[in-house]
Length: 203
Image (cartoon, rainbow, N blue to C red):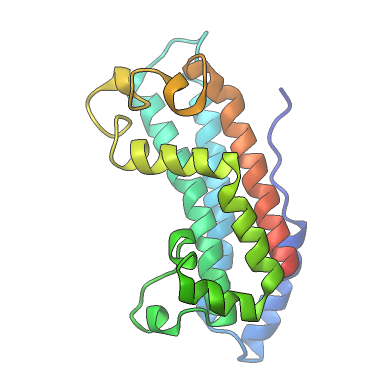
């Protein structure tokens, strides 16, 4: 399997636009920070996957390192997506009240009716891109595993054998076993990377 390569062409183009806007005082400084955070979180997720591979069969399974690596992978990929939505929030002023409270946007908050309405007025193509992504299997699988397992479930709990909530990866993702993470994680990274690039192209 070829190594995962994250794409940043549209990210870099958007970075230049954001920097110009900050210099011209059109955009807040925080927009530049979150733009950087998005990339950093994806690169942490990539590193987490490289660590994860060391503990997948046929290599010796080691419970704690495996759980740490998978937890980091899931949380950072999802955090990268949420960081993108905060970029969108700051760029288009989607929810000024949220920003005024010192809170940040997430993909879930962006789906609220008022926020969708504001984004539709600001950038309809971007809203369409996000709506399509949230319905895609790669995203729903990621969100399910991250929300139900990494944050509240077996990955962070005591029951190692119930790592995917029902004793078998098949229940959640249709896997044959944990070794399938060797292909599932790269697929998630690639799909997320493509999604980010499509969004930056629209921004």
